[in-house]
Image (cartoon, rainbow, N blue to C red; front, side):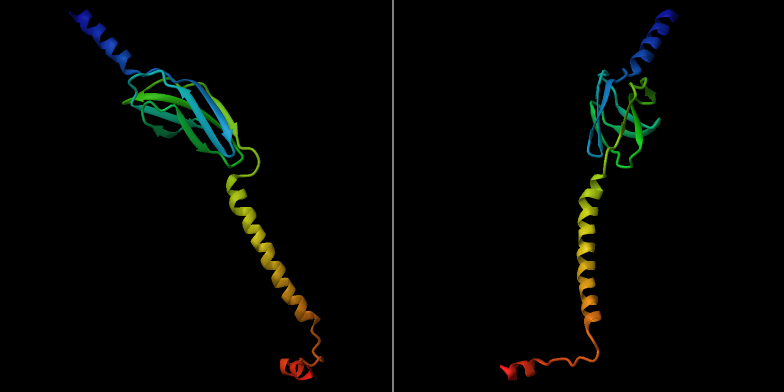
Length: 150
C-alpha cells in the first residue's frame, strides 16, 4: 500500500511538470523581434518569456508567438518556458537579436519633424534678410503714391 502511494505521488509530481518548449526562433521585422516556438505541453497554464536572463512577459496557454520591440540598438537574448502553477519547465534554447538601422519611430516622427523645422527656419531666415537689406534712408513708398502714378 505504501509503495502504491509513493508511486502515485511520483507520477503526480512528474505529471505536474510541463514539457519544455522547443525550437525557439527569432526574426527581425524593422525593430520588432518576432519569437516563435513549439508548444510541447498539453496542459500548461501559460508561458514565460525570458529576455536577457530575466522574466519579461507571461503569456496564456497554447501561445507559440510573441512580438517585442528592440529599437535600442542593443543585443537581446530570449528563452521560453511553460508553467503549471509554481512548476516551470526547463528553458528552451536561447536565441538573440539586435535591431538594425534606424528605429521605426525615428523614421515616422523624426524625419517629418526635421523637415518642418528646416522649412520654418528657411522662411524665418528670409524675413531677416529682407530687414537687413532695408536701408533706413530710403523712403517707404506708399501704395497710394503708386496708384496716382498710374
